[in-house]
Image 1 (cartoon, one colour):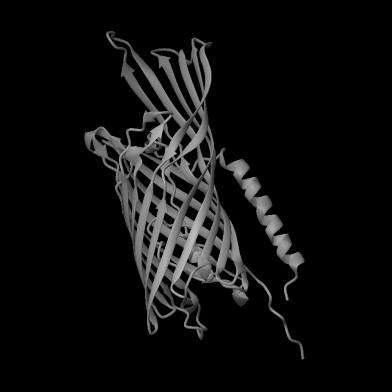
Image 2 (image 1 turned 30 degrees about the vertical axis):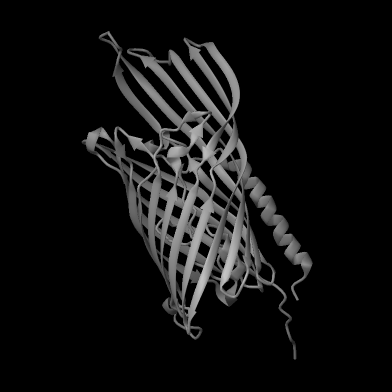
Length: 416
């Protein structure tokens, strides 16, 4: 039997990692998109293998921590302690008129661990980005009523993160329920500066810093209809609209002199969310699923003011094929293949245009020797925004890498 000392060591190291990563997350940017200027920033994906195209509300696997629908945790393997660590590299090309520019971002995407704590009860702890700011926008503008120009610079950094405690319960042989307890935290900094024509330093600077901490939750369910070797799984998710506490610091400088300095406290809303999914399992090797997600951003407020956002709808399709039938000896027969596509209407309107995102992804899961884990890699290609009305179209690609490590519990070895 694996000693409790070994298990305790793993839990301790993982918790230390969570604390360290949470302290470091506020300093990093997960995006360079100019659209992160709007709303709460760019929304980060919460899907099972860090691939935006992957539907997941109806998916469950004994070796996968599906935080998106905590009900899936009730299916965790009783003999495994699962540790996950993920990174994402994003490559973007911004197009506006005849101009274009490129950006590269490499960032942490997930740290999690989970296990089956009791028959029919799975638990997981995870740390993931929720939103990110990373815009750097410069424009040359004409002084109102004059003939001179000035340069306006807008910069945003930081983001919001989620520390999640997930619980999944098996109610019957077919029904599982789950709940995520969420701690939201992070810092957003927005800077605006103005440099007059011919000047070398800013004559005006406005810095707004938002420090956020708050609690939230969502619930999920999965119901499985069994047909001999096949099954149809219905997955649902709900999150209520909840206000998150925040402290806002504003400092305004004019010609190097502080003209305004104030700190106030308030709340901003996290939207009400509805999600539904239908998945089809064929034996133990093939799964096909589709998700629909609705986020009610139009009803949210920030410091008692309307957010001027719109409701977001996201459609996702996915296929997962496990080529290993249990007897595979060749490398490619041991892999898990994943394919996905998505269409996201977005939650922001810019110049009367909705900023939509669409794309597709594919990936593979490569098992480690002796069942010690799996390396998941996915490639995603997509497009956000449009070039009409002098807007920006972002063509992007992502490489998502996730390491899953399995620690086997309660295995008694026999020696002869």
